[in-house]
Amino acid sequence: MVEHRSPAIADLPLPSSRPASRLPRRAVVGWILFDPACQPYFTLITTFIFAPYFASAVAPTPAEGQSLWGFATGAAGLVIAVFSPILGAVADASGRRKPWIAVFGLMLMTGSALLWFAVPGDTARIPLVLAAFAIGTIGVEFATVFNNAIMPDLVPPERLGRLSGTGWAAGYFGGLVSLALMLGFFSTAPDTGLTLIGLPPALGLDAATREGDRFSGPLTAVWFAVLVLPMFLFVPDRKKGLPLREAVRKGLTEIRGLVPKLRTRPALARFLLANMIYADGLVALFAFGGIYAAGTFGWGSIEIGIFGILLTLTGTAGALAGGWLDDAFGPRLVILGALLGLLFACIGLLSVDRTSILFGLVPTTPGTGLYGTVPEKVYVGLGLLIGAVAGPLQAASRTLLVRLAPPENIGECFGLFALSGKITSFAAPTSVAIVTALTQSQRAGVAVLVAFFGMGVVLIAGLRAPLRQDGGRAKDGPHTASQTRRE
Image 1 (cartoon, helix red, strand yellow):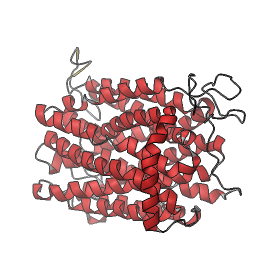
Image 2 (cartoon, one colour):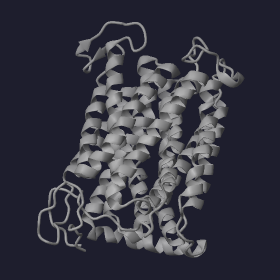
Image 3 (cartoon, helix red, strand yellow):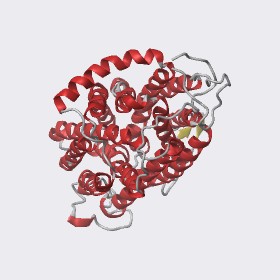
Image 4 (cartoon, one colour):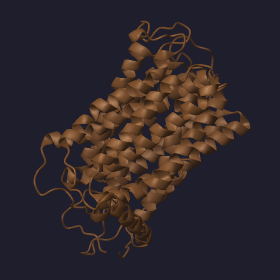
């Protein structure tokens, strides 16, 4: 490909891999439901319920809990980094995607269900709990690789942004509903043993041993099993290709050949590098956001859960709006704006502590009630900003990959996409874990994330695209039929 320098890449043509016949609406709906099927794993387990519970009630101290959680997240990320592109290449060769989703979905459910055994104060079970979390994380991420690879087969190219954004919005809504169920009927305040609506935990769960918080794992497993069924029933899969052994051999061969191809696709290579960095920071930000709030303000499951509901509401709206903005202005501008918002929010979160804001320059007075102090209100406001921009960032990144990837290598490229999002995903959580362990300061650990978002901004801002074949300069807007890629 001859590279011509121009301001943006949003108008590159999209791969035309969709079927010739129009797919029924239920197929699109079935694909969309995969996102809300997975979302409780991220909402309940990695962010708002289980992770803070683990750090505050299972681990010896919140700082040590943050460190241990970071090492487990990093270990899972390393496995995902190594195997995602290989599995994507195998899927391209073997043709089928849904059997892989079934296998890794089973890992997600198994890992989630095992979190039930995280008894408060039982440090002997910490290795089991962290291993279960790592297994579930690997399962949900690998399943997502294959679900993403189905996306270009479902809708016309000009609707990919809305499809991706709708999926993320549905995911946020699924997370919202699951979080509301947890807070209303299962998760309890440690001091009262009651849920948010003032009831004992449902199903006879024991508040004293925090069974309501632990139930977030089994609930996630059942939730996934139910909501993923329409995808298996209604979304068509590609025809079976090569046998597994031959597919593995062919996939490994194509992986070896795909990386050199990136030299002829500099825009794709730069995007994958940027995604590697900012996705790493986003994973760590969500992994430690609830833990950081629990340690900084002493928030319990109720406070963190309500915070999660508010954040999920802004996330749903943001993902829907981001899908329309993606189709209207291109994914590059959506990604860049989202990264700037995350950079601002991350610095803002670090500037507050229990008694002051703006890095101690403005002391505050104690308050009462839910989020009663000024620092808590600021933290909530910045969290809402994170929710509003995180969905568009992830949805637009998925769309941009589809725009840049060769259609014949879409599975491999989604494997590389997962690789770029995970190859250093052990680095940010592990960096947070190491700095936290060395300094015994949660703030110092989370501060490393500013660098990840800053580097993402620089790389996306400098992303360039080829000129159109007619010599006109590409603009950061929707794709048109006259715009083609020179290779």
